[in-house]
Length: 247
Image 1 (cartoon, rainbow, N blue to C red):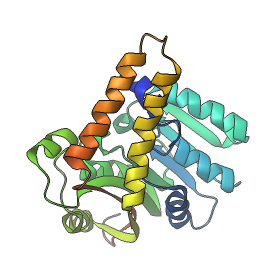
Image 2: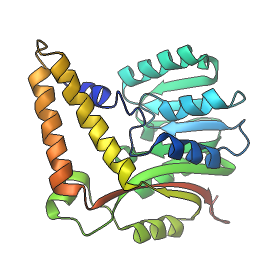
Image 3: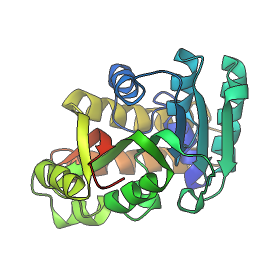
Image 4: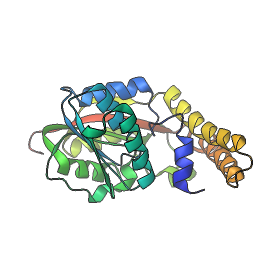
């Protein structure tokens, strides 16, 4: 069982692949899409859940998504067809960092995909290339709520604390117009959902040759969360606009 298949099963009950509940997702989209007829781009869209939710509630919106996973894009196409929004969604199978478009976008989304660009600021630099004048960026990434252990840093990455993270974004020429720090409930619900879904799949498919591997993977990730980073790692989502002179 490869990493992509593990991710698909783990997120079966939490299709937003970040520690955000449905109400937070709705509010972030509302702040990022004030008109409802915007052109939207998701860099690292996976199964397209952000775009699908935006399209389903905004009949005049058009969206594009970019991802390296052909399977995830196939899921997005199927879901778009089921929702009847396929005519307003374009999907691109390529690395998000390599994507180019002749038309700018009113909202660029990249939530939980900063690893594809090498970090938060490189992700914002990529978003800026695609942004229409007056447009917005919806970005989500991790931060350290408390001083982490070296093991946590090696496992998740070298994040900054919340204040430093926001300061760096502002110094890069962005103005936060909305923000959300994931709650303890959102963070815990995400981890329980992921590793519970994977464990449930393994228990429901005992004859599958990947069952034991899936069960062991769920146990490993659950233990890492509880013992290594649960009390130190947080998640920040921001809606940003460009500061004057930085467009």
